[in-house]
Length: 217
Image (tube, rainbow, N blue to C red; front, side, top):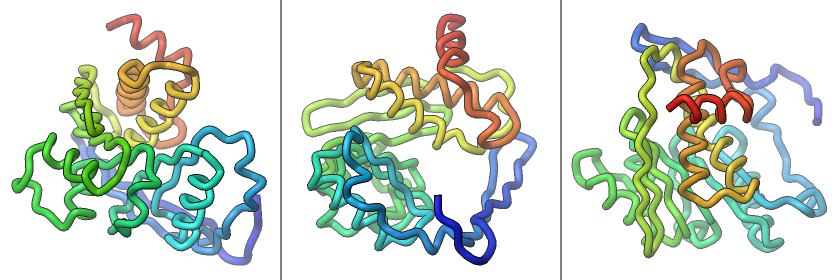
């Protein structure tokens, strides 16, 4: 942890009656994040990055991780263009529909869900994980298509952190040795638990809570 003068990064979140949210982000100290020392990646299996710190730092971290044999998951949120030379360095690109359209410069009705994911794979990413909200998710590689349905949630309280929880659940699954499909099911369950609770960090379930949820289905 490093300290700098000024305010910490903060997010202002409004939640509608149906549980959907809108987020206004103030970067604060996040914009002063600098690259870690290469040695800090030693022993790391996955690097997970998004777009809430300076892009120059994120880009350098992706390249450094790739050079050191660390797998890279990129979640370009908030949505932003990704230079084409970086796609081949990405093991898993995780995007929702809005982010996918934004980084491709396409309209939502121009491509099917599968075509959207395949288009991103064609740019060089080894796998694309397209999250579809209540419709589940789609995992696409050059030779594989997996569609994972969402778990039914009777009472959606707050969708804040649903995507972050999904990604965390997926990485927790693959690093625990789960097959991709099983890791995606675990991630889907984790996200389902999160949206049934109010808040962001406080809504993220434990491994035990996710496993208990799955057993009840």
